[in-house]
Structure formats: structure tokens, C-alpha cells
Length: 267
Image (cartoon, rainbow, N blue to C red):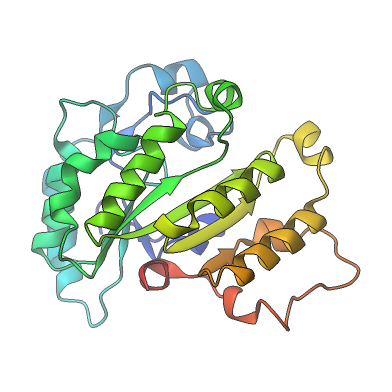
């Protein structure tokens, strides 16, 4: 394939296939690994994202090839850079329409909030489409410090509420968990508009990581999700923290250790 690819490493826990539309992102998230992957300085990466070259043609070619595959693998848009960069740019809409027109399962992961709702007509009535939102923090000041260019928390929640009303399957990426208390509160408050939760701790920020008891958070998170009857997946980054008691690794969470891929995320 030319532009749709099979992710590896931790990204493979989210989806079978992925598609990144832009080279860069204006959201400026402090934890973003995009600059490292794209081999750019953060200032350059966050300044002026441009679409990948000939992306519409390349997506169409890949979609045609995938449409004839024995098994339909879902495509996540996108891992590197948010797919919604410019309110006037309809490129993401054209990409999603191409995937839909070739009967390919697809999902979006975004921090753009209400801007993303403009494409909900492509999701409605489509059992193979789902809408994902990253929720890291609900405190406005902390969110502005960590994700300065992304949509506010209320805008993201509103997009999930609208998707739910339209019977669009929803999921939330609670990754990176920066403040465990806020992550748990997000689950408590908004579980009724989220069909699936994916939870992973922050990495590469030692001072933040040392500030929290991640084993305790994992226990509390699993207990809460189980009590709510929620569908969830605990990412390996959170399972790999030390746990002498081997808490619930087999007894309570065996069904949530398998990488979900797209289909599980939409189920």
C-alpha cells in the first residue's frame, strides 16, 4: 500500500491499519511524538502542517486494494497529527468518503472537538464507522498547558454527545493519562456517551510518572470500568508497571488484554 499502513509497537494496540493525512499538527501537544517520528524540530512540526503529497490519489489506490482483500481491516485516521487542522480544509472529509465508498471500516481519533462533527453524515448509518476523541485532562488550565492548540474539553464532550444522539459508535483514548484523578473523573462523568475506553499512562515524562501510583490507578480504573459495565482496553504501558500482587491480570481483565484492532474498538 502507498499511504495506508500497518502500525507497530504501542500504536498496534489501537488499530490494524492507519492513515496519517498531514505532515505536522497545529495542536502543539507537549507529549506529541510526531516531531520525533517526522524528524522535525517541534517548532517546525507544529507551525504549518501540510497534507501529504498526492494523498487523495494514494488513498484511492490503497482503498481499492483493501476492498478486494479477503478480510476487511479497519483504518484509523490518524495517529500522527490530528486529522482536523483547518476549518476550511475538506481534505479529511474527502479521505473518509473514499474509505466509506470502498466499504472499508474506518474510525477517527481527534482533539478537534466540534469541528469534527461536520463529517458525521459519513458516520451515520454506517456500522463500520466510529468516532474517537482523546481526553487527557478536564482542568482548563492544565489542558491549555499540555494541549495548547487543541479544542477545549467541553467542545470534545459535546462532539461525543452529538455522535451518541446520531447513533454513531464512540470511543475515548484516555492516553496519555497525566493526572489519574482527572482520568477517573472523566470516566465517571461521561461513560454514558462513550462506547469504549482505551487507557494508557504517560511515558517519557519521568517527573510526572514518578508523581503517581500507577498500580493503584490501574486497580481503581479497572474497578470503575467493571462497575459501570463499560467496554475497555488497558494498554500495555499501564499493564507493565510493577505489580507484586498480579492484580486481576487474569481473573478480571483477561478479556481486555487482547489488542482491540478496529473491529473490537467498534464492537
